[in-house]
Length: 335
Ligand code: UDP
Image (cartoon, rainbow, N blue to C red; front, side, top):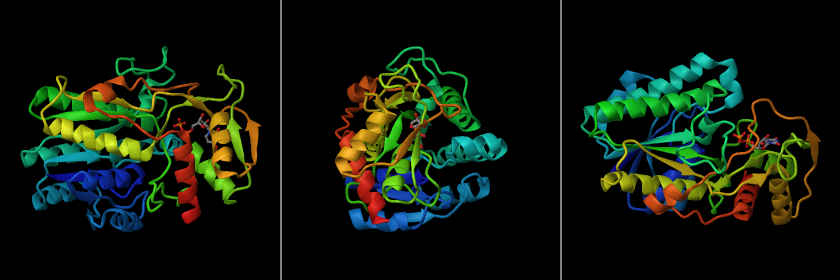
């Protein structure tokens, strides 16, 4: 079974390639290193012994993308490739709409032209916004998107849903990620450090490693158990494995809805201060942080009901916050 992984050298893409290879899939990557590095291919090879072929193409370029589908025949695709910075998307909305929608359209068209199907799409819990009920299930209504980035995820979900309606033999799964964190246990792949980190765990490890002086806890007056925001942190290897299970599910012809929709979180909420404490405990490093004002656009709390993914896909995330922190710290120290 040959699978196209777009964004294959990115953070979640690279971990998913490892998991796919370990489960017997042949993988081809398409990535133009917009927000990643070719060295991820070395990391994948060091872990799996397999040198993955990567096509350095812009997937928003229809001609280049369709040429790839002329060269390689796929049994399915996992589409990660996208611009992903919430703050940047506010300043560059057209770039986000152009890139994130065109690349998805081109990948669907490419699969379709070769008579293939089985698309797994990276979506995000950001579609739930400040949900009225917690934990959120897949039936929890989506809220108006808070940013162009979040809207591209909603649009991607809708584009796939409409296409599946029009072409019922085209099968797809939408995966809504909560907060992916941590790194591969080998410390050979992890989150690309070339951009200044904005996500909580790389900010924490960056401060601990002395790359920055201190960090700020954004908001301590929320209506939560200690006043800081609550998130559902999911170890990237557990998240990666869910993609393998999702593909196997599609390939086995399972599922009634098309597209099927799954939340991918551990199912537990952790506050920012609890995350910091967990890091200090695991690493033995005292973190230099200050309590600061709220960050614009943050939701108060979000965590998943993951029972659908567990019941339908057989997905059982096995790593908790300690593994997240220890692997993120090992990766940071390897850089
Ligand atoms: N956060 C923080 N300080 C930082 C970075 C993040 O307090 O330097 C908080 C942020 O306000 C949010 C949580 O950590 O409550 C997770 O933020 P992240 O950007 O990792 O993910 P998000 O859920 O916002 O996509």
